[in-house]
Image (tube, rainbow, N blue to C red):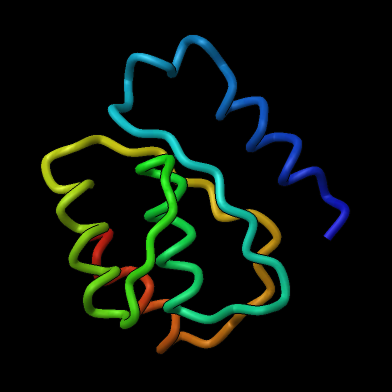
Length: 96
């Protein structure tokens, strides 16, 4: 930490020159508790700007995939400390 990554990401995220280049922009703070279900649901809620009461990961991933399919999106995952490759692969499932 402490290298200015968040500050740089904020500048890019808020730059008006990129505003029209993406259909969807979302900023998600992940923090210490990296849980694929919760992070995916938080991304979905940031994308839809509404709360989601899904009970399982497959449902949340399906809803997120529906919202993102065919769209150009800019997603910032801030304050990430997880290095588990399997969890990252699982998180990427609806983003591909």
